[in-house]
Image 1 (cartoon, rainbow, N blue to C red):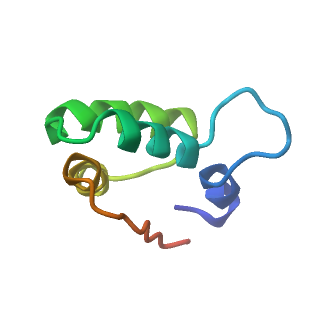
Image 2: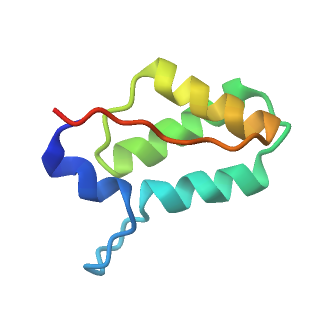
Amino acid sequence: MSSHNLKRLLADSTGTPARSYQAAFAELAESHQSRPATEIVPLLRRAADEALLGFTAADLYEQAEAIRTGRRYVLRIRVT
């Protein structure tokens, strides 16, 4: 992820209409626990695309597995 997109990951206080990825992830974690990861990944992809975040397929699958199992997930990012 490039450093100029880092703010998009966190809540946006500028009042732009798009939800932050953080909010979308939290909502999915609440509503999609125990659902198959293959069902969750496309929803995460859409949220990431809307937030202009370039997660890889592996990143999204790892996040979906955390949502599916209900385990805590710590997002690790590399800023380039």
